[in-house]
Image 1 (cartoon, rainbow, N blue to C red):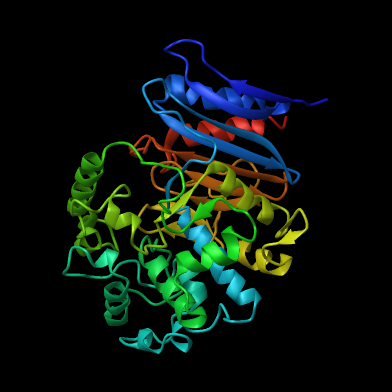
Image 2 (image 1 turned 135 degrees about the vertical axis):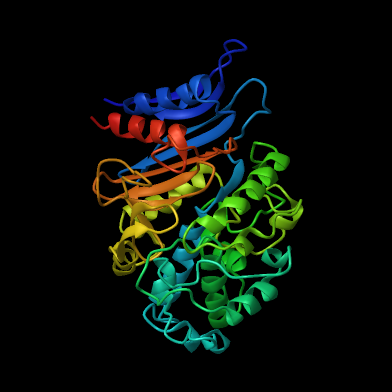
Length: 397
């Protein structure tokens, strides 16, 4: 028989402070979580697991040099935001407000300029739209919604939609977000809050909410800015990227800045607690319905998670599998355990959320300890994340 164990570590200065609850069966996952603090430089993080629709793990902690992590702390989850936005888009589709195979210009006529009339919503969802970046001459355009939209209207595709898989790191959010705004009238963060977060009690947001407890990411903003400036130097040598893509490398271009917090950047500006992110995926792991509430109909979940594009992603040079807005389990880039049916989204720095319908699992890991990728990493998100996923599936043996 499995029992819940309450965790509240306060042993010595070398032991991380871990709190929360864990079903005894998931001790290997708990051990991996502690191991991340003792051996892999974790400073503050949280993990959460739903199994068969039930909450079975809810752990959070910090090292002794860091302020205490609380259960409801949110942190910047970077591109995990893309899955939140995808759910908004699929909700519009389920409500027959949009068609995913329709050209974007049906809802946003100005987008059709410069040979973009054929680009569909679906091609943006699977990162094959041909607009992975757009030039901008102003360092703060990323924080200005209308400036970003004008840039996209003026942009010229760099390849024919549907032909190549190239990650739309920022443009994904502005393109899909403008479709949402044109159809519904609300900006993505407001739509997500009013249609997803509040009615389904999902502790996530597409924009930092200052009235909610949060953690800033680490390393420091100065390090993050420095890293982005270095990246901007070698990005021109990567196929399909442009120097202009990272031109907004000002003192505000990092997830801890007030400009970032107050701007609509739905591809990357999401904030979540582990509990909230895991609950969102618990709905999807159970076909869209949890505790009698339906987030999305089963047919829409199937559409979102059906293989839409597979092949080499041309910026990372890794093999990706994409659904319609969800990353599908891609062992070469974003491993999500042993089951090919798993789907979700990772974020730069280490956070991840995913659902595994075969094992009836939903998992989330959020961290303030921003991972910097290196050539030895199999995953962009590093050792800590993969350590936890191994512990998760070891718990099911």
